[in-house]
Length: 196
Image (cartoon, rainbow, N blue to C red; front, side, top):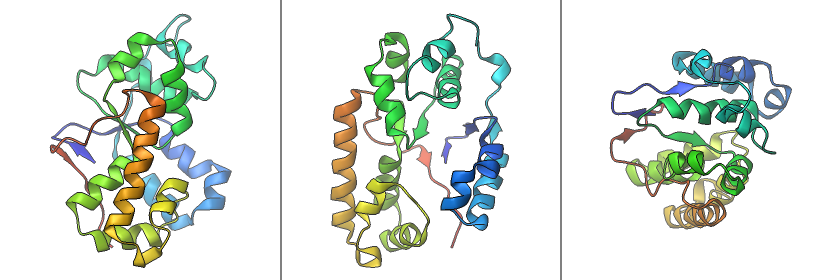
């Protein structure tokens, strides 16, 4: 995914996490993990040295909250130095924990800057060949329950059913997380996926 010509940045630990996490090895094939690792390796890494991690910093305030892990805290803290950014996540626990926190300045900065996986899939459905999107999702090893529900009929899933289910999930998440989610992906966001 690109935003105009700006770089996509990932956590410095993304590649090693994909390569070494035992739960991922149980869920996904080696080929899938290698593709994800290669993609993570191709993106620019967040410069961890630029993030203030001292006591009292945003980073420390974030990791003190249950369901916000150090990687998510680093990602959010990095936005302090970015004038224009979006965060793509499928971690609903993280978003709910952040929305319930008293970190008003951070929540204001992240307002309408979070893209959840369901919004990304909606964008793909609306801007690509639905049959191709459906085929890729049904053949994938995606373990997200909401996405699985939207495509529960496999290749027989209709575009209308998929969109309705995904839009319901986005509405529910928006109700639970306030104004963190972006209203819709900007037209300047281009999704690049490998052909299959």
